[in-house]
Amino acid sequence: MASPAVGVAVAGCGYWGKNLVRNLHQMGHLVSVVDANPAVLDGVRASYKGVDALSDIGRALADPRVQAVALAVPADQHYALAKKVMLAGKDAFVEKPLALQVPQAEELVALAEREKRVLMVGHVLEYHPAVRKLKEFVDAGELGEIHYVYSNRLNLGKVRKEENILWSFAPHDISVILLLTGAMPEWASTSGQSYLQHDIADVTMTCLAFPGRLRAHIFVSWLHPFKEQKLVVIGSRKMGVFDDVAKEGKLKIFDKGIDWKDGEPVIRQTAESTLFFPEMEPLREELAHFVECVRTRRTPRTDGLNGLKVLRVLEACQRSVEEGGRPVRL
Image (tube, rainbow, N blue to C red):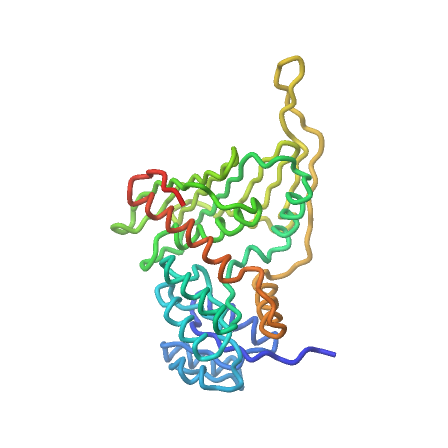
């Protein structure tokens, strides 16, 4: 027997919010959509019969059918609206980042605990089957000791005016790197440059130093000639590559490395495995997880504490950018 629907309102039906609206409607959970743009609301009324199209989030919060609210509004509104949602007795799904300042995120985490609310952050790659499988390989020791991880997230656009490339793109990479390593970095160093707009970095390069010898690098840019979304994990035994732009076979495991024989380095190239996954949308998996957490009161995989950790790293990276790349301790 199918589980009963969980009533969800979506605040923000723009570039990304429309994907939340589409998925939640297909899943049978969408009650209302809140947006300040009348044209957007007209589109909602035309496309989603029976779904309320509202300009005031207060009406959604007052609706007893609404159990949870998904926020896909600009990042500078995340803190205030998530707080308002939870104080109204509703559960909250917040697109990344959880907030723009660590104290704000800490307040939201404490509020969720006090009010017994589900607070989940939209770190969608943590719900990608290839990332979950790569995590399994790392945890099982298949790759050996992890030496370093690097991630490239590059494209031409979408250029934002309200946040730089670090805040727009890098949360995805930071969340996956923290997931795979199971640790927090000790310090972060980020250099960036603004080419298109004054004081809004288009390109950043980040180095994260973890306890021991583990290092991670993140290169993000919206000023790049082609799209690349690739994460590489280098282990002492094997290497893993997650290529999210690839149409299929998004995860490859390489049985490659360097062996030492008679004091000389010898390249080992044994085998290459490509893993294929069923065609699915990670966002659908993420929203299904959120709905299930609302229904069962379980703690989400990417809960407020998870979002807070990512934000701590982001904030250190931002301080480093502003200080010319100086390493900043977390």
